[in-house]
Image (cartoon, rainbow, N blue to C red; front, side, top):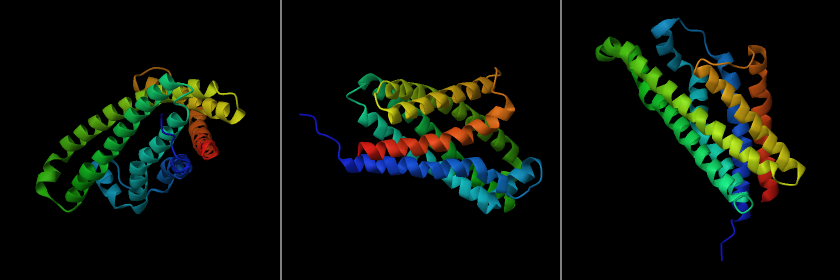
Length: 225
């Protein structure tokens, strides 16, 4: 006999999804409140002293754990209805979550320390900061490309899974997962030098869809509970 997951599990996943609305909005809008800094390396080093930047950096670190918890709840709820899609989706979102958390850990526990050492006048760091920054930027971009693949695949699998369900809320959430896949395909295309969404559309579509999608996913999970 297979054990059923407790309602508490789905409540935690639902609350995590709702909390991820907050981190999503922070990631989108907090850069507008960053303190002005100089151009180039000195400005990038100075940014670490900005409390708004620090707040966003930690929100960035927490965000993938919240979203992955929600995705785990969605996959668990649908594991008997669409086991293959649920498994493929959660593995893809796992790739995204691990990569994004690792990417931000590189920022918080390596690059931030280099910035502080540079500001403190450490001669070794000041002599090598351009090389360190180039390495950091390269690793960050590589991780960004990898996590986009995870989002594209996970969103597509979850969309196909939820669109098969008969109720309206499940299908609406499935549509939002589909939109996330399409958005991420265009972002990845831009990273590879291909076509992208028009700038005016791209500016609004992410903040208009992602917070709503995560809120609806949270409501869906709470209903499952």
